[in-house]
Image (cartoon, rainbow, N blue to C red):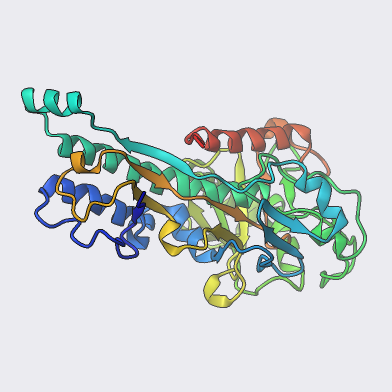
Length: 387
């Protein structure tokens, strides 16, 4: 049985005349697939706009190392593996099988459906186009953006939890024991300042009232390592949080900071408003971890076959042309298997500003971790793995 795939990013294989003689609505269905894989459309979402340039797309090939500095991890047939024994307990937290992808829409048009549509003058192409527009919106604004955000928070889309607290593991093992930001490991080999050699970038405010040092301490810790790019720090936060930052920056104790209206820069960092972000957390990122700079923050593991990446329609027949959705009977709209990983442990951090979860140490306790992981859990609820 022939299987053809249409993504709009590569040719349609044995379907060269896929749009010849097709209706405008059917052309629109195919155009939505193209749009879903278009960077321009994806960048209408601010998270995609910020995080996609920070990722490197890597085909999953057995034995191919993930391009993450220090980490010695490789793709395998079942997922990823590492030679670092400290990494094993973290790996055991999540399903080692690679993502199976998602079938998000089936083009099922049995004879009775076609007869009923004709009798009731229902335009099946137009109905399919409406569905495709909705799916493309979810793919762009939920699946892509939240998959990237989840990997930033937990270290990988394969894990629902943040790294466990470490008691100060010695040497490079501290770096390689988990994906995600530092959480208590010894980073003496990476620090450019004297003092404590452990680093924990999952933080809380230290008192019930947020003060500027809660923010600047984390920024300083990110910048005071030899992994820092020197390009500055960007903070992702809910609009309400950014409004609070504006008030804090203009408070009398911070009078040396210039008064501004819309927040773009404060406390030595740039601020980005992220609608839909949890109102209790700020995410700090080293701005220099860009693919164009040769040091990506995220690694996106994708299928080896280029036509099996992103959003695509899988046709299970050998037709050479399709003029309407009925011709596509049996086809499926699919999000192909992929995972995201974040292994640059000193490249960012997360600050919980909830007044009820402050801790004098400034480090996340169980309540903060639970709240953050609850936010992560809501991201998974948008998709159902059906295979």
